[in-house]
Amino acid sequence: MALSYIPSSEGFWRTSETSPTIITLLFSFCFIAISFISARSRSRNKDGAKMYHLGGYPMLSAWLFFTKRYDFMCGTFERTGQKMFRFRILQHHVVALSGEEGRKAFVSEKNFDLQEGYRILGGPAPSPRDINIEPVDGGATLFIKHVLNLFRKDRIMDVTPHLLEDVNRRMDDWGKSGKINPFQEMYNLVFQMTVRMGTCRELADDPQATARLSKLFLLHEKAASPISLLLPWLPGRAKRAKEQATRGLYDLLSSYVDLRRQSSVRSADAIDMLIADGHDDATTIAFTLGIIFAGVVNTGINVCWTVIYLGDEPAWKQKVVDEVKTLLFNHGSTTGPIHQRFSAVPLNAWEEEMPVLDAVIKETIRFTMSGTALRRNIGGDMLIAHKTVRNGDFLAYSLGDIHFDDQIYPNPLSFDPARFLEQPGDASDVLFPFLGWGAGRHPCAGMRAAKLEIKLAIALFLSKFEFSIVDAFGKAPKYLPQPDRNNIQNAKPLGDPCYLKFERIESMR
Ligand code: HEM
Image (cartoon, rainbow, N blue to C red; front, side, top):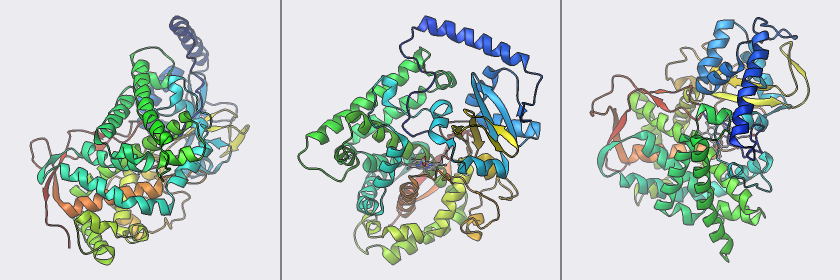
């Protein structure tokens, strides 16, 4: 699960001017010094405020935090029986929270800063700063304002027919029947829609440029390793690969920003909005990269899992098919190809008249969004559940803590959208029972667009094709792949790959 997509300012550990030898020496020295200090305190498992302290080697907890984050968080809570524990990552102190009190503080405490949390311990969103280009207005507040502005209701309504055209064109490229890897092809549909909404029409209309952009994002993602995330300044292949990908992304987007600046007519497209707001090129590119990263990473993976779970649950698939038919019957136009008929459906209907698909998406997200959200305490020492969280401490909350709590979600590992149909609006007494779209001070700014994209892709897919899930040999798979909960970028599939075997059907009536 990637949550770290807000354009951020320079990380603490980046010292791009320092020579590699000095860095390696410093690194070795720090490692020895920190290990020595922590080894002395290893036997002490309670700090002054009686919070459980993991002790041990900070490098080991750091390594586990970056390689097996989900197992590390859940396993430590389970092993220690604590609701909170403290550990070190190099020189940083991290407080892991769980339970209702911890969750409530995590999402609603005003001194817990989201951007600071992800800036150092978060994932790998591409930023012009990684190639030493400094945006003038790179702050989180302006970025979120841009996201909210971009996904205003009127703008989404205007762009919906273009999104449907895009999705339809790409689905037609699959042919009348065949086999696709959903984690590529369904993902690509979301990539295309995100480029349509987050950049400009010249780029979105150019399949080769869009494919190149997608490839560069993939290269950037592949360059991320635990070491490169932990020590982003450390010279080596990963750093070079990341810089090359960022440079490629920057140059590609830069050419479209130039194109739009030179145009005498302003359009309503996202890049033109940023230009009209007076942003410099680096900010325009940083925000555009942020939108694509934020837009693709979670929406892309969730559309893939949604279609997998529907394929595995014929009864739910049928309910969604019926709902899509009703939507089309009530609001769609009666003539033209199917994607054009969907274009007539108003946004309100997509948002309010699809309770079954809403529940399916929510249940999918409950399953897949089990990564760790991060914050940093920037407001002085404070007490949470009678324990001290110090100024400067990082905070970590695993969404799995709530999403797999069997008191709230009985039989939490079974896929059951009915739990959200029977209990609309999270009517339980529990505080913040669902964090798949964020909550409290940081609800997801892209939720409206993300939900619509998933619905458009699923509605069109179900209307155009009959499908089943198969393995590499075209047979029904013995096991479905599972979301990799330890992957800190997103819930990639673990296990044998599966495919969608599809066949074109007569358009829905
Ligand atoms: C299925 C798709 C998506 C899911 C499941 C999702 C989930 C989330 C979650 C859980 C958070 C809270 C993070 C935290 O508390 O640390 C969040 C925040 C955020 N999301 Fe999304 N997101 C999705 C799509 C998008 C899209 C399409 C965009 C924009 C292009 C976006 C932009 C943001 C932003 C800017 C924030 C931070 C809000 C703030 O700091 O106040 N998200 N999202």
